[in-house]
Length: 211
Image 1: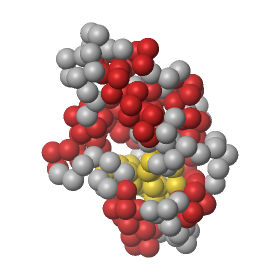
Image 2: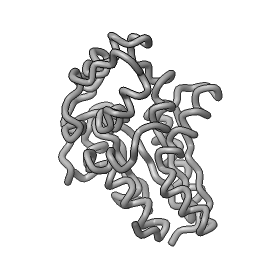
Image 3: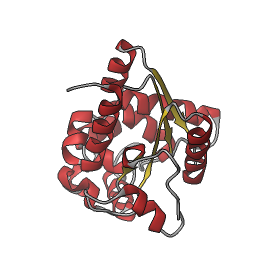
């Protein structure tokens, strides 16, 4: 069981005003694990890195300088991928990434949001409806259990159509993303998103948590 965990995450913008809420939102989504980590007196850090490349670079730096820490990289897959795909193979072969797996990292150290973080929101339409309020068009969303089968473009289009009749008029990643992370139900998301379940399983294994 590790005594120190650091998760390097893509997202949150590039200012303290946006990175802080995003970090808090992700910690809220992972609350079940965070609570157990604190009971076990394990050091826990969520590092919102902004851009995708920045997250990877920060993870590489941490793997080199903090080899005793259980460092994890959490990024969008950008593409729809199979539930049994090899994450490091995916980012190695993907145009725009071509990332190498650093020494000391196994597949559990790379976690993917498929195809992007917003797929988690599609997996809990009730939370979306509660967040955006009246006139939210839930019928514009794909079935929750198909959230990870949709491309980033399809996910964005679905959210745009669903939110257009609302007071907000649209989904904005910086404005809404962190707040929605605090509102979505991890149980629902894990049930519908196999890659999210993989994230929880890997963190539970690293911390010795048994659900």
